[in-house]
Each structure stands twice: as C-alpha cells, then as structure tokens.
Image (cartoon, rainbow, N blue to C red):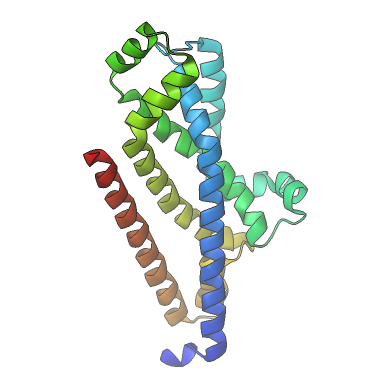
Amino acid sequence: MWDDFSPEMLALFAGSLWETLVMVGLSGLAGALIGIPLGVLLRLTDRGGVLQNTGVNRVAGGIVNAVRSTPFIILLVAIIPLTRLLTGSSIGTAAAVVPLTVAAAPFMARLVETALREVDGGLVEAAQAMGATTWQIVLKVLLPEALPGIVAAFTITVVSLTGYSAMAGAIGGGGLGDLGIRYGYQRFLPAIMLAVVVVLIAFVQAVQSLGDWAVRRLSHK
C-alpha cells in the first residue's frame, strides 16, 4: 500500500494540493467580491429595503436561483465557452477557477442577504432619520453589523468550493480531485484515493475552525 507513495507520486500529490489551494482561494475571493455586493443589492431592493425595487429584486434573485439550482458538474460544461474566452482553455487550474467563481458568487450572495436580514431594522431607521445616504447605511450600519454572518457565509462558501474543486477534476480541472480520479480510481490505487480524501477532510476542518474562530472574535466585538 505504502509503495504507491513514491517520490514522484509525493511530488505530484504536493502539486495537486497546491492547485486545489489556488483554485479554492482565487474562486473564493472572486466569489466574495461578486457575491457580497450582489447580496447587498438583494437586501436593499427587497420588500422593506432601503431601495425597495420589486423588478430589480426579482431579476437579480432569478439569476441567483438559476445558477444555484444548476448542478455544478453541468455548470462546468455549460460555461465552457466563457471559460475558454477568459482563460484560453477549458482544462487546467486557471480554467477551473471560472466555473468555481460562477458557482460561488450566487451562493455567497444568498448567505450575505440572509446575514443582512438579521441586522436590527431600528439601526437602519435611526441612520435614515439622521440623514444618512444609502452608501453610508450600507458601509456604516449593514455591513459592520452583519460582519460575523458574512464571515460565516464566506467560510461555508470556501468549504463548498473545496468539494466543487474535487468535481472539477472530472473534466481535467487539476487539483486533488483530478489526482484521485486518475490514480486512485482509474489506476486502482486505493491508497492514493484515501490520502486525497483525508487531506480534503483536514483542509475543510481547518477552514471551518478558522472561520468559526473569526466569527467568535467578531461577535465579541
């Protein structure tokens, strides 16, 4: 069993782990940069929101729901033209970041919207009474008050992206998922598959623990 872990295989394993970290890290950051503003838009234009607008809310919500309801493996294939346009290829680590970001952004947006809903409406009303602009309400009331929930949302998103990145290996996305499929499954090396699963579990546990710690720190403040 341990003979499967030759120096070459260990080097390949390390490279695949790095690819997974790059995929999850870049898509997580890009997803947050898109998802947080989108979540704010959904909350502001919702019924009772500062910028209540049913039409905009329904269109934005419809797009978010459409992407979220599409299985990731199908999304990978469906947006291959966009992936090629942005990265010049449909396989590899860089190419996998595109569908991962597309999947992460609406997921993050809904979680951010939920976190913003938990903000005390009295704080928003007080800010409006003092003449605060919409941007001031967002930057000085909504986002600071909802920050623990937003951090928790980001943590959940990164954990989900870890699973998605493994699925990306099914179409040559690289990373640990690709390693597990090519060596653990197709070449019948169960030790490699087991090692991939253990590393992914450890990574998810580390991300979740770090996220929980950050949420507790922010909540105490």
